[in-house]
Image (cartoon, rainbow, N blue to C red; front, side, top):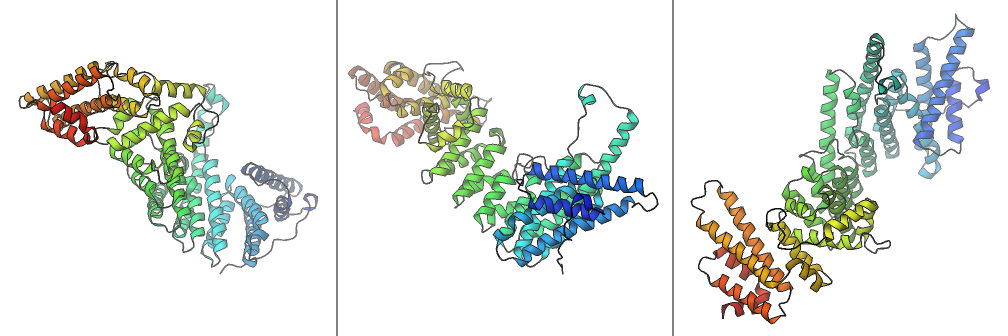
Length: 567
């Protein structure tokens, strides 16, 4: 059972007669100061305390050679003093019913204890503070368990940060230090990183049970404590600075176990804030993989809007377009671009434009190729409409569209101009810059015609005229007929490739027919020409059955054209 005791009364720096008094004085001064509790201020205070303790020890050693304390004794006294301050802070929590009465003072004490213990090279002090925080993880009061989890999270952050490799000025300039000195430095770094890795292992073992604590807020604090391990390179910085040992393998096993628990929490935790926190913070780029991506995508369908937003943000920040399969991209857009929730729709728009479209160099045809409009027409139509709408509004200073505002935050002036130029530039069905009309280009042009506010001008740019479009339609039908005739003799394409080619040609033909109807065929000559082409195509015995049925299935609202073509 853990007991609590108040720290000794503070004294001024001038009256300090021991290391314990120095530590108590600094903790009391920092607790009562008006300085904002930021990481920079805490680190600065911890550094000043390190300096004061060292100065006191050296001064005492010079003035009293026989009675001076050994390094071990100094470390033990420092560890005892810091843990007494921790105990005093925890006793306040245990005695208080409301957090408002102690939040600021207790937090400042725990922050300074963490920074002082884990930013130095004294492993005895670091282990004492970490072990005492671990002891508090199993007390009955949930508030203390929460603060202990938070404190261990700070410990992880400082341990990871302090192991960043330092690059000297000489090394930057291409000069080399003495070989012996470099070897000594490496051995020192290995020793330091070794005990810090052991501390991380102990913290990981202690935090894992709290990830499934009965109290949701305790689970939330434990999840937050794991963030430094998963949000960036994390503890791999420490593992990378040590030679491979049993501890490094043990650490990897603990990391995998924690990650599996977090993935379970993201799917099954009853608390929506906890699911959102895991999706947003603990699925960083360094740990994202083919195994973890499906869990994040699944949260795009979560019942809580904050979880959906967190999942979409995580996908935008940590997952590239090439990391996803075609089915995964389509699933994200299908559930993200929903009209039932405007905030989820806005986050999906941000993902689509600020990540996927940007990775395609703002080329909508390249993006549609990755979504395969032949098989995923409805989702691709939603995405294309979003992109076209974004291009027309992205340069507006004041927009009532939340999605536009989110995307604007990611782009500067040159990128906005490039975005608009790529999306809004003139394209037509007759352009053959890349060897002909592709399914993605035909689909994009058809959606562009449907979405245009000035249909006459847009259609004239895309189609040129109805006879040209009809000739193009005829040529694709002829290609399809010729392909079916040679199908049995074609040994270069397997069955799947033949089916994909046939589906693509059918799809292009259907898009061309849609574009012709978009023009409304008000001019008599154009309408007669189009009806003549339709009559010829539908009455030809060589026209593939799949194309005929596809046209009839999709052209039910254009029945007057089909009737005119057949009779």
